[in-house]
Length: 65
Image (cartoon, helix red, strand yellow):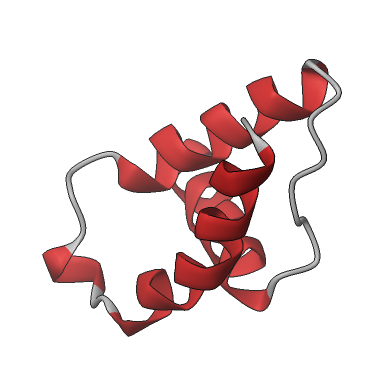
């Protein structure tokens, strides 16, 4: 992700919170966290302290159980 990409990501992260679960794309709670994990494994600094992301990771973990 380029610097511009990270700026875009951070600026638009709150839009995820505005979406209801019913409006999310099927599997979004799996896709985005997986992409963020991949980015971190490539030493790309992605925000992980966001309440929105924490909720999304919690949704994924709940569905995986």
